[in-house]
Image 1 (tube, one colour):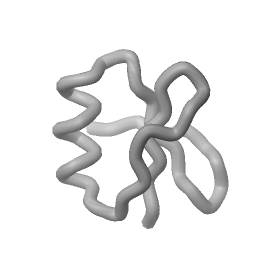
Image 2 (cartoon, rainbow, N blue to C red):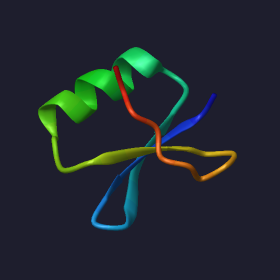
Image 3 (spheres, helix red, strand yellow):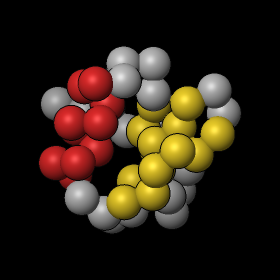
Image 4 (tube, rainbow, N blue to C red):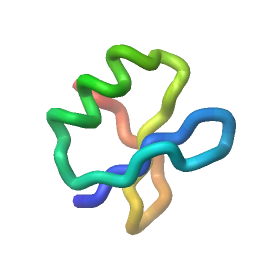
Length: 45
Protein backbone atom coordinates (compact mmCIF):
# COMPACT_ATOMS: atom_id res chain seq x y z
CA UNK A 1 0.00 0.00 0.00
CA UNK A 2 1.20 3.52 -0.76
CA UNK A 3 0.63 6.05 2.02
CA UNK A 4 0.27 9.79 1.52
CA UNK A 5 1.03 12.10 4.43
CA UNK A 6 -0.88 15.38 4.26
CA UNK A 7 -0.55 18.65 6.12
CA UNK A 8 -2.77 21.66 5.37
CA UNK A 9 -4.14 19.95 2.24
CA UNK A 10 -0.72 19.37 0.68
CA UNK A 11 1.06 16.06 0.20
CA UNK A 12 4.33 16.08 2.13
CA UNK A 13 5.40 12.43 1.81
CA UNK A 14 4.52 9.47 -0.41
CA UNK A 15 5.85 6.12 0.83
CA UNK A 16 5.10 2.42 1.16
CA UNK A 17 6.93 2.10 4.50
CA UNK A 18 4.38 1.91 7.34
CA UNK A 19 7.07 2.24 10.03
CA UNK A 20 8.23 5.52 8.48
CA UNK A 21 4.65 6.78 8.32
CA UNK A 22 4.09 5.99 11.99
CA UNK A 23 7.30 7.72 13.10
CA UNK A 24 6.62 10.78 10.91
CA UNK A 25 3.06 11.23 12.17
CA UNK A 26 4.21 10.73 15.78
CA UNK A 27 6.58 13.67 15.37
CA UNK A 28 4.06 15.76 13.38
CA UNK A 29 0.67 15.32 15.07
CA UNK A 30 -1.11 17.77 12.73
CA UNK A 31 -0.54 15.49 9.70
CA UNK A 32 -3.07 13.03 8.31
CA UNK A 33 -2.49 9.82 6.35
CA UNK A 34 -4.43 8.58 3.32
CA UNK A 35 -4.34 5.54 1.07
CA UNK A 36 -2.92 6.71 -2.26
CA UNK A 37 -5.23 4.40 -4.23
CA UNK A 38 -8.56 5.24 -2.64
CA UNK A 39 -7.91 8.61 -0.99
CA UNK A 40 -9.48 7.39 2.26
CA UNK A 41 -8.02 8.44 5.59
CA UNK A 42 -6.09 5.78 7.48
CA UNK A 43 -5.97 5.58 11.27
CA UNK A 44 -2.66 4.37 12.63
CA UNK A 45 -2.70 2.00 15.57
